[in-house]
Length: 387
Image (tube, rainbow, N blue to C red; front, side, top):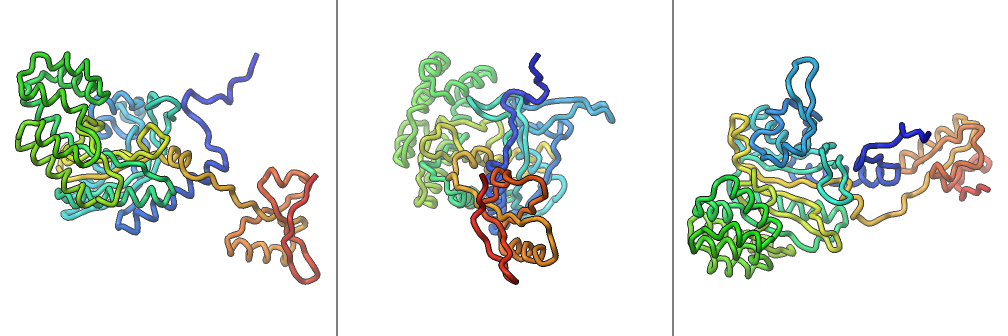
């Protein structure tokens, strides 16, 4: 009988040394970039009471969350599937600042099901959030920060998709759709399933019906905004949303922008501008973000909020594959002189491995490609030769 004790659950995997080193390097680089822009690092807990972890975040996040019973309190707890609600709680309930607060984070999350084909159920989520400023300046800042972060990862972004949930919300409200019908229409628009959209809006009067049917076609460069202004009803909410997207197009003109008014990811908790970053050859977004002003209300303090998050595992997969630098083998027996030289080399950024006795011929598999050799009173570094 095959021993299966070492097998991991589906879509759960170990990260081995080379990939782990890449992930850690990206984590340090991104958190340093966030810190340079004034974002303070926080570490929320891995699990919380469900009512705190899932306030107003929508049915989709609830379904993605593993739940268990706390043996101390008897209350239902959840293993976080998204860190963003936790950071919103920290801003609203713990820091309780009056002005602008910038926070960043990095940690493991857990999903009941993978988000897509070959996706992990344990994303390593990293992100940045800005609280306390309702103006579009905050959205501009976080999108620029995202662009800089991806640039640091040497990931070539093919496009930043921008949308605005107020457009669909205004049309759905005017159509008078029941919550179930609105949810079904939302899914059809998200998938650009035009036949289903046509079926769902068959009983809606024009001009709302025509507007909902044209939404899946309103994607492309900034000229889409002019087309949308002509094709959609002149509702105040829609006019304001298109104006905000136009301002973003002007402020972020140096980035590869596109617009998609039927992209409704995060619709259940986003309140305004939403965005996603894509890179060439990868069908899924490498980063998701947007404004979620109403979220803090669940924690007793509504705060303007905008931000983004990414999966470090995915970033590592997409970033350039660099050959790791090998280590220097420090031969046995160790003495004070060799120990001092090893310390000196480590202080200069080298990785020095002590050759424990009895393992000759195995040091290349441990990552060593050079060896420290004594030459009189001096030390030299030579290429490691093993059979």
